[in-house]
Length: 225
Image 1 (cartoon, rainbow, N blue to C red):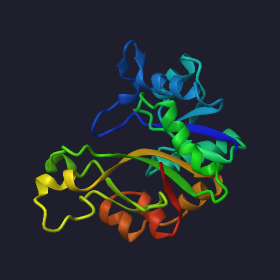
Image 2: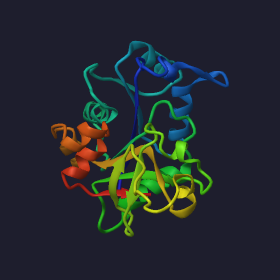
Image 3: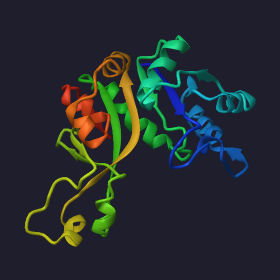
């Protein structure tokens, strides 16, 4: 199985404009991300729509691909970059351009399902909320939650707290059930990446503003690590 990592990086951001170029211990964040991923994979590209990010990547010796400014998500940008790169990889790993702390175990965990006989269409990662998590933090809508099956498949993603714990005070929810937080790292087969970027926005995706719900609603297998 051959892998390629693509790092979507936008300059314009409502929460933190120019974050990929912000310095972290003397280096741009995008360089930190690139170098960390390049320690684990041979084929790595930054996909951007901004000349400043493109130039910064070239300056530190990385590989950058200029993509359209009209993409609605990093997944769409990944597909264009994958096609422009000429890569023959079987699996595309989408690494956020503002997350410099990706670890080798995370990369291994998201790759492992594709080595199995019944490989998924897509893989992603979760982490459990600690048992002492306050309900306010558990309910934070910008921290999507995931319900996971016994065979490690994603059943649903939501900005709401799922599942609802009936008969238990909300402040005790985290102590009485394992809730999972979604980590925005994805891996797709090349076929799945092509399919999901051709799908129209689904009703669930529109309701929660979570693109992965489009994939679930279409019946794709999303494996969770």
